[in-house]
Length: 288
Image 1 (cartoon, rainbow, N blue to C red):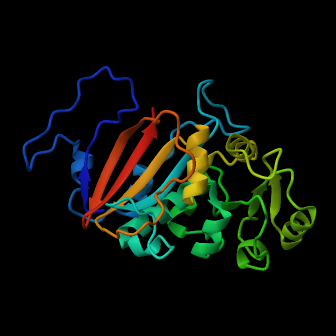
Image 2 (cartoon, rainbow, N blue to C red):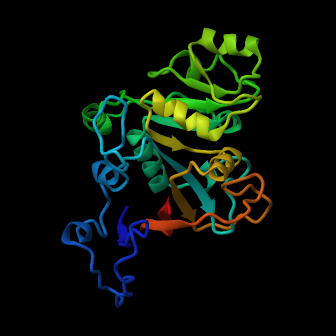
Image 3 (tube, rainbow, N blue to C red):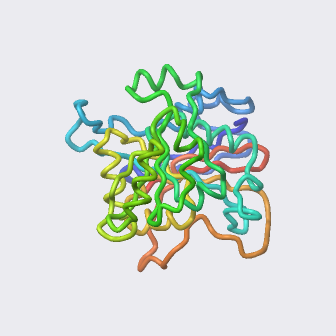
């Protein structure tokens, strides 16, 4: 990151007047914020900027009665014309700075939730431990790396892949009660932990995030894909969206960042932060 656009977190009670636009070249940002302008941020500074709300009510840890029991954020990228991928993958519309934020969000999370199709298309591998986040994770009582949680109704997954056979932290598989017993056994034999989070063939989003939180995985991150993110949004369990807007046009008919039935009423999110580098906007929105 080389430039910061300070914004007021609109998720807070709207008691103060809206910030006024400043003349070009001026900023009312605090000194510690202004210092970050026009230089590359360190990973530690990015980690502070993207820190999860505190305190979260982690099992076994005292917290305020009204503290959230878990926090689910999504990390997605989109072009100017709304495409969430190009030729089936998101990497083509990403950037080096986007990948730094991608790594930072993973470095802060307890668990990364992804749909089975995204795992297949993006070639998911186990999350790795990174020295830059080791002290922070240890202080927060986290495992060296986040667990990967794969959401799949059919369990049509290749359980011989390193994601299942050799992760640093055991991979989780979220499925429904109607899943094939043979496929469940295959997953468990490969070393995955299977979690039933639905009474039918699929996963119920509210049960999925609660099951993970009950395991102590309260800092939750989803990387999609669009169908899974659409299900989380429709169920009202998505707390935050970290959206990279790429300065690209792809035309075509690529998926948006969410897919699924139209919500009866659009759900309002408030802008919490904006960063910019090389024309890419790195936005953060929180549910009101």
